[in-house]
Length: 252
Ligand code: PGA
Image (tube, rainbow, N blue to C red; front, side, top):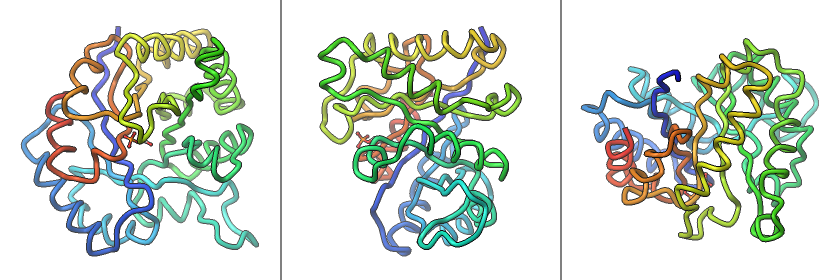
């Protein structure tokens, strides 16, 4: 099996002035400065991207955006394109986060268009999938994940797919303090990898599949011990540099 480098992305969501984001970014960079075993990424709000990208331009910590539009330019008031994100210094973009799906009506087809736009612009998409508690209780978890994944990566060539990451984020675990057990995460991660392997064994072997949903310094080790958990997409625990850096350390 390919050795996959651990990957941790802090999703700051709708938090932070420019000054607060710069302070957090600086503390994250300093906190992980001696850690060499993982890729570390932060995802500030759009308004702070430029300043944070400048602050982190030595490259030790990379920048992600939290969303993008699927057109490159035009009459799309209020939207930001993937090429604009690349221009500002982003390397990654989080797509299809459950908050976007649930609160802003984002559909599977839009996630696919956005992923393709991101790849065109040279960004690596972090594609989020996840089931609700009702879907889990109804035994529909793997079917739901499969449908979201199939839609998101449709018409993406294997060479481009090899630049994508997938984040499994059970909706019931996001911001709730309730984490999927390592076994629950592993079941879904293994399913995602097996599904990608039906298209390309090589891409599947190197695909980094992140877990998201109340990941913390004290549960990261057990999650990362699972064969198909390659890192984390971290919300709440990424808003304090000390806990985020500790998580990266514990998990890599
Ligand atoms: P959480 O959020 O770590 O606060 O649960 C994760 C996410 O939404 O990416």
